[in-house]
Image: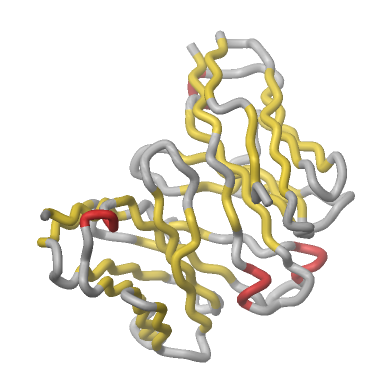
Length: 117
Length: 119
C-alpha cells in the first residue's frame, strides 16, 4: 500500500515549456487535490476533484489544468510554464463519502519540486 | 485574506519540555481542524485532528485544544523529542456547507511553524 505517489520528484523547465505532473493513490479515495507550497505561504489549493468525473478550481488555478483520469489518478498540467510557477507541488486524497471528520482527512504524496527558469 | 494564521514562524524548545504551537482562524464556519507535520523533502503527514464538537483531543504525546469562542487552537507536544523537529501546519475545513461527495472538502492551511527541539 503505497498511499499517494507523485512523479517526477524534480523537474526543471524553461519558460514556455509544458509538462504534466502525475499523481496516483491506492486507497480507493473519492477526492483528490493539487496544492502548491511556497515559502511563508503554507499550502494553497490549485484544483481538486471531489469524485471521479468532476474537477473544480481552488484558490490559485490560473496557469494550470487538471485531468481526473480515473478514480486512482489525477494529473496537473502546466501548458506554458512561467517562473512564478516555481514551487513544490503536492497531491493529496481523501475518502470523502460522508461528511465525517475521519473521511475528510487528506493524505499527501511526497511532492514534486519544480523550477522554471 | 488569511483565514488560518500561524503567527509564530518558528519555535525552539529543549528536549523533554513542552512544545506549544498556536493557530488562529477567522471563518466561524470551520468545524474541523487538523495538524500536519512536514519534514524537509517529504509530503505533509497527518498528525491529529479535532472536530468543533470537542475542545480537546489526545493522541499519545500530542494534544490539540480548541477554543471556539476565541477561534484559536493549539497543539501541545509533551515531552518534546528531537525527532519532532519539523514544520507544523494547521488546517481547517467546513464540512457542513456542501455535500462532501460532490464538492470534496477543501482545507485551508496556515503558513506553518518551524519547530526545533534541541537535545
